[in-house]
Amino acid sequence: MFVTPGLDLLVETFGPFLIPATLFVLGAIGYLFLWLLTRSRRETYTADDE
Image (cartoon, rainbow, N blue to C red; front, side, top):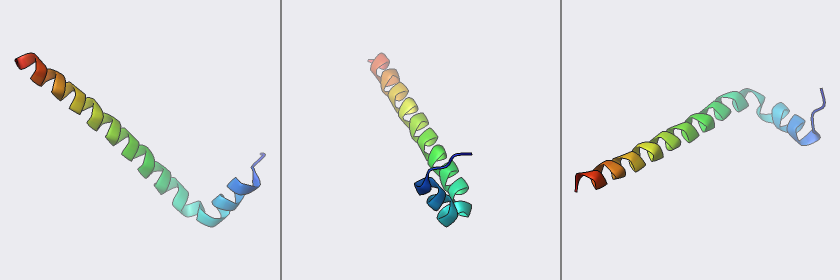
């Protein structure tokens, strides 16, 4: 498997930390997406009440 030298250095240095950090970042992005989605829906609901 071909791995770039920079990626290989990162895996050797931060290997055990990469999987939890990646999952945390993906979870944070997903949470932000859901928060923005519910916020925009809440604004449309309040606009319909008037």
